[in-house]
Length: 287
Length: 287
Image 1: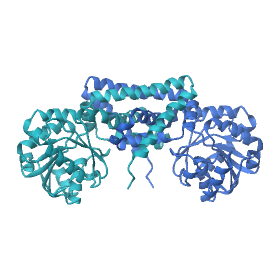
Image 2 (image 1 turned 45 degrees about the vertical axis):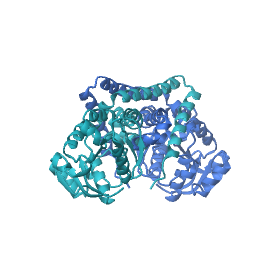
Image 3 (image 1 turned 90 degrees about the horizontal axis):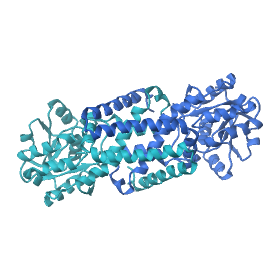
Image 4 (image 1 turned 90 degrees about the vertical axis):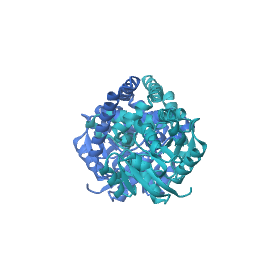
């Protein structure tokens, strides 16, 4: 992609901070401006090298932006996109990094000016850690970024969004916002719901007998409460379906165990094992 | 522990192979004999450095053993312990590495000679890989090994079993066989059941949108089918209870989502998060 002038990152936590570090590390922008609500954490992000300068004023932060990336919690993204669209140059691209897309796209589409500038995105990388202190320039390298254009999305912005996220190292996948939310309910939100369920189900007294399987499966249960409360609420319909499907699968196991049905237990495991092997084989080679 | 003479490892796969490598690497035994059913895989284990010599004949393999470690699948452990007890010196210690303990201890206790020589053990480390090719000398370093003595266990053997497993780098925990099975139903078998449920619930077409949470939570679903069919059957009562508890937890989330009950969703997540943080804080410092 051609070198950008100013990129404004709205919300400079783990995600926004990592985007800023990648832009600066790859020399993709002349200047990265961090926009946030708290000057102390913005200054921390600046000292980490995530942004060049910081402001708590959205209007001045985005005033000269070629690209605005909104990295606030999903419940705030649509409103921040709308506010950014009022002060950013009309030619700017606005994109986001929210984990859900349908509600955000629907809300932005109700504002014609914002809708004309916006391309919804979900770069699929994160961490159970929060804050720019954990940001990493390579967080997005080789990761999928899903773009979810709507009928209102301008084609030139879609092309620029592809270029922007590719420039950060992402592989681009495109689908509708509702389809995205349905898929990530299974691939991301369900694993988070399971991690938290497992963590809460095992009494702390028994932790000494928990080994790798427990540790790995519960890792993401350490993630931020407000972040995940907002994601779960935003995607509650698809997530309820996904949880139901998972419960059905567990019920099949319980039924086979109740009957000590060796062949059913074997098939139950080997079907899962085959799917998991397929996933493993599909992964790009590691670093 | 004093240096041992001969240690016989019955079943030289990932677990038995790692025990052999640790014994040899730490100089804990004069000789490690591998006992198995297939000379080809025994020769592979020997070329990996897991054992000094190999035999498919149990009687000659254990004839001079100070210690016999039975590392066969849980469904075969009790019978292999009984067979080993017939040919091993009467002063030998027999221990095992099975993932369940109640059924094994009950079966061994029915044979007075075997019961007098046996101390049931569960070293809590493993891998989703199988076979001595994946064995590692450090598999047990710093891991918990649960010993589950019964009223028939001889105190001198219990003391020798503590010394043997400590010598391999394990931290020793002791409890009854039934209590062990109840606890590992939650801390180990439930995470495996969840991993397989999640792997099977997510359609393969959606794998490109699966990131770290899915990958980590499903990792152990790659484990051997026969191994896990046997473990699930052996511990089916406690596992059914654990699965039921997990389903209850998921149902609470579904109910909160159905009502878009923000406060309940927040509490549901933060309770789990607190438990997971406690687990993290309890872990010994990494290598």
